[in-house]
Image (cartoon, rainbow, N blue to C red):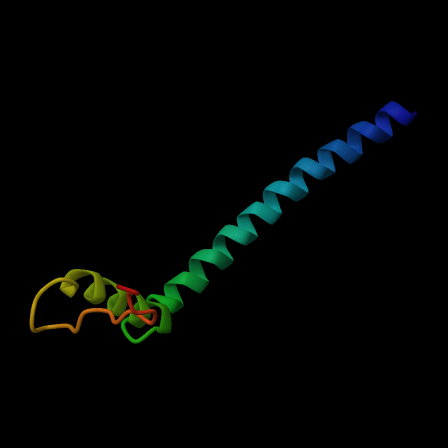
Length: 73
């Protein structure tokens, strides 16, 4: 009797896990789709980060980073 009950609990766990996994996947895709839309906040932040990386070191387009602690020469 306990074995049969354990079997049903295990089957319910597997089914529940796959359902939970599918729900998490769909919610994650939906969330990141909204965030990465044309005017989404994450997209704006990533575009700024990529532009920052692309233009670093190009003279005249971006100021070099200023050190907060000067050298003690």
